[in-house]
Image (cartoon, rainbow, N blue to C red; front, top):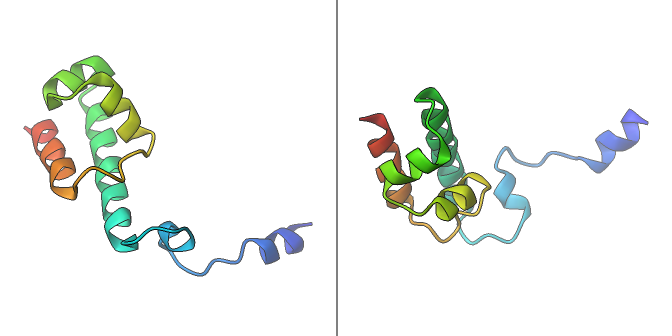
Length: 88
């Protein structure tokens, strides 16, 4: 059974965005890492989602969507600013 699964799950790249239709796969991979950093900082500071959203000066619903991976339309610089706010 594992041999069949291995055949089906052939790994072609470490960038998960290359397998789907995304214009700039390297940008999406960078954004994904930044969102991971945002999530880690929120947890490290033991912030509730509501408090993190206030600190980031964004709506709670936006933070939830970002953490769920819905950040394609957000500029990389905006995400980096979020890291900066959470780091101070």
